[in-house]
Image (cartoon, rainbow, N blue to C red; front, side):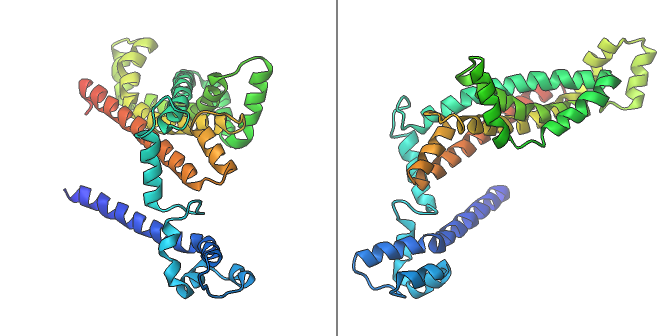
Length: 304
């Protein structure tokens, strides 16, 4: 109960700060609309208002504060505006509608899961090779680290152009970008996990004349499970980011990235924020699902 109250307190505080932030962010636009409607605003000169900060304008025009939470196209939408947009685009729209956030979420989720699967398999295989081969440890691991220093927003268009030039289109380019972001956490986590057994455990298996394969399956792999699931949780979130980023350079018409693009093109900030929250909710569900799988697997292995 105390944990629930603590979470609710933090959420309420964040929402309160969000509402407060809307006032200075949206005040300029609200005063312009109020002036056009014939209201008296201070200062009356538009140029002077542009030189003033949002807080100063709010203090001099207190009557306009409620309007900062109800603009049609605000700089910063209020929490209730985002909540209404989420409800409208998830519950009130058919999931087959191009305006449904569920439809766009499914498009992005498909690329996310495919890329996550590719990245996980690649990451596990690389980790196994790194643990069992000194050459791979010295050669592959540094390149894996260097690969993550390249900004994905710069690399994504290059990947898409190259794949499009060889006729690879659709979900595959987005999945490749997702895999690129998700494989590194899996590599690092699995390497750490496979190396987690201590010397005494390894020596014990040597006294039983266990082969490298038997040591891997009976000791290293079971010991790596907690590390693997921890890295998978990071990888699935990174994979979702990769799928969204992969939709941006292509001018996609479906997916959460396309939703963000459409909102930015037409100044629909409420749509942008609802898509962002949709992505966050989707990521939370994916991480939560992995958490349930982790709990089940580790319990069956006697490790939970």
